Image 1 (cartoon, rainbow, N blue to C red):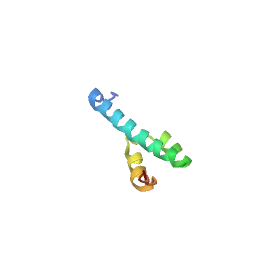
Image 2: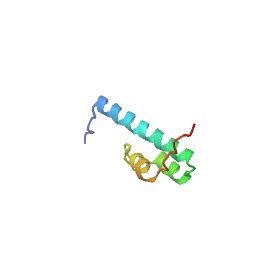
Image 3: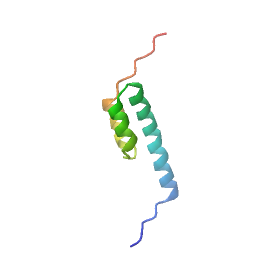
Image 4: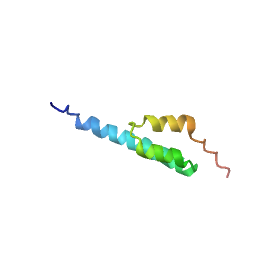
Length: 67
């Protein structure tokens, strides 16, 4: 049984894509005090999909700064 080989450029792009979304989603969950979301986002590897869903539908919206 052979293991299919992924294109290294594609794999690198997927890892970078996922890390960017994961970092932003983890940051927002931590700032909002949403520990459950933080834990789920930390351990679930969904290539950025769960992170995007969280940011669009579940993350509190940032308030515009007054100043």
